[in-house]
Length: 190
Image (cartoon, rainbow, N blue to C red; front, top):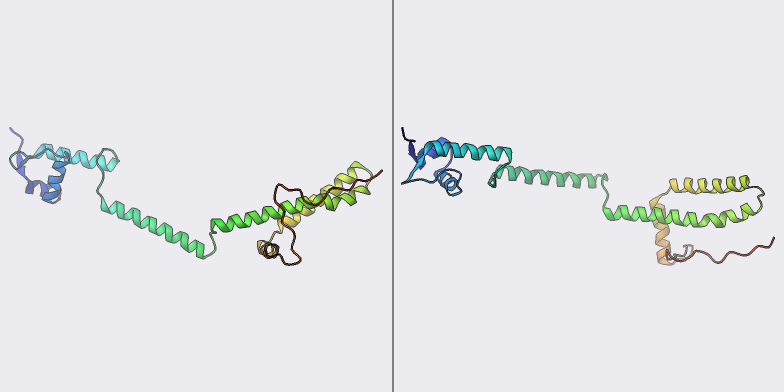
């Protein structure tokens, strides 16, 4: 018995597609091409089933033309974007520039506090006699500096930075990172 051949309209009804889509599948070599306007029913059903299986498992060279999947992907991207915007408006997210500014302010405060340690400790250490006393004094000054930095307030530092930039009295001098701070140390005679 020969394989039955059917017209395009029958295949379209069987596959629940339009006649035009059946012709596209034939042109894309998903199903065998028609001979004299008729399609081999068994070969077309097998080809279409293989096509659907390949799409379902993500295999095959065939690009899915699934507008529903593309629409879902677009809607998810829009929802993610909206969610991020809401978080930013609620203050749950910060702009990269703002985070960078906050961290650079903290690092600048940390740097200036560390550079001030030798000046603050020099006279205290001069009056101490033993290694343990000197170490204890230096350790106390380091802990004090760390404690002060743990209470870092970026808003307070921002106003301090603004004063420095405006050049108004009361600000501190800004020094390039590769330049030493302060003058030369005085020589002490023993």
